[in-house]
Image (cartoon, rainbow, N blue to C red; front, top):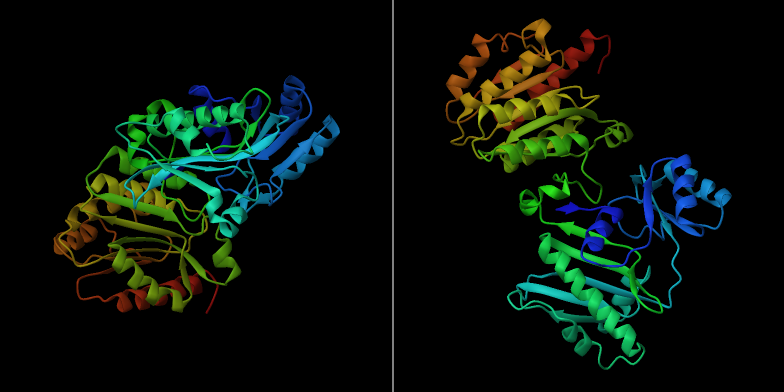
Length: 424
């Protein structure tokens, strides 16, 4: 799922005619001052991160003057919000509103159709409102062949006298605009919270838009880079590169996610970080059951299965080895029909480019366990190219269990550490 940042989502809303506050994305105090001078005070400063509940986490600040703006921008750009580093901010004109409403379009798997969601009590407390009073959320299933029309929403709001007739019409029109965005850009979720009502219009004060990864190829104009994500954080550069590898060639997959991109978890728990690639998610889990108790921790997950061609293994191997701070590499295949000689060719080419001075022999502990179809050819290729003879390389075949692989890596690692002057 490709989750857009707020300013990206608002750009799509603006394209369909939705009113949004004047604003600019900034990455420094001088840029923020220039934006605010152009927009005019008072302004709102918002952390641009792929996560919600920013307001309660201190990710939204208000500034009445340049002094207040400087403090807000300096504070946010040096902080983390909801565990995510803040690299950019949206400086927006503060809008005076009379009411906040929650509006969204998403898919309901039970109904097998889109559904429009409205709550007349929008804002930062929307989650609490829905938990305590679920009846406050109004729902309208949308027939995807028929579409959504303003009178559908007006009928939904008919008995809600807290809104004037003009406000109801503005909410209905805004909801239909959200549906247009939902359909036009193959979204999974289009959410505005809050939708601010003024005397004469409805303004999107925030925006969350999640796009379908599988549909991004239909929207090159968006220039959205997506990848598999861990948790709520955005995709790392390496995840984006790996996702592009998959998009360029559908022959097999190289499903890559960085579990510990900055090694903070491994360091905090005293674990040894290593790069990891496995053919088959089940085999990778079994390997983790063996490696983690021995003190190792994979900084990435990678499942290179579905019989990918050698060129994909070549590129994803370079991605895995490019992770800073790794102290080893483990490749393990499950016993399957995957053509392992192609896998070996890709890994060999990557290693020779990564370690040209040794003919492709890595300088960190490396386990290559080839188990399955064409394993003999794969092992022969590793020997012919001199990889198997590497001092810090162990090559294993079908007879090796996951436990055998883990123990071999453990032994090799401490031998390597000892040679570097360390010890167990």
